[in-house]
Length: 313
Image 1 (tube, helix red, strand yellow):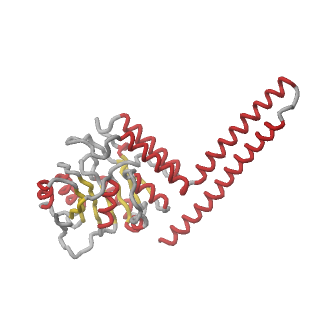
Image 2 (tube, one colour):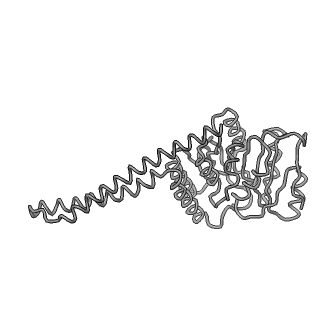
Image 3 (spheres, rainbow, N blue to C red):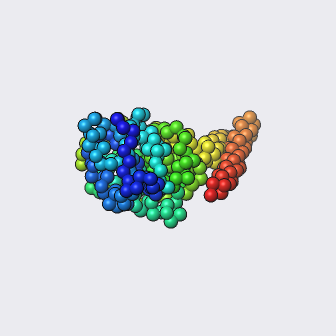
């Protein structure tokens, strides 16, 4: 198959906006392409990272978009391949199943153009339509978004949305990172670690009308994997959370032991548990030192990120 087919009024002109769409033979894609051109103009660059039958591919070629062959499994790998190929100053991505409000792309791009954000997510919880998301998926997405918000100190409602836009220089800082299975969370995690400003906009989210989701065989297992990546990344981005967690466990152990010693003292009117008292004091001191170390390391890393961010401007 040809590696690409470029659609542009002027093929020599660099597009301002590039839209990457990962696609596994979604029929609704054929309606999304003309809607995007109507919304953003015919001179946008639309890149389809595609995995489909030959017959479907022939139909897709007629739309005049750029087509890249998906060679690795995972939506993350597909999107980052498209973004690496993109030429625009602002890069964006949206699912091919027509469940996301396309107007959200335009709103996200506007935030970047107005320098209000470097990376913008579409918040589906801001406009869930009837039967668009099952209850267990709402709970899982809300939990993962809360976990992300705690770790990165960014209030995000929907870290696994399928719609986002990013400034080129922000993407360039993560373009060579090997993608891992965390959906759009992969981009949100890595860009947050680089210190770029992240925001979100509410979008309508519709019920899927054709086919079934191809994101993962088990969304529960997939969600666990995303949570693991968020927690694992906390070691590098937010050491205060890790150190404080360990410190609090030591403090709780020290307090529990201290309460036991005090109860024994009240009942016997004798202080005989010297060893346990020393252990209690040691646990409290270790816990306190862990928290202090977390504060210091977190402060130093925050200063480092601000310096790097200032150098990138």
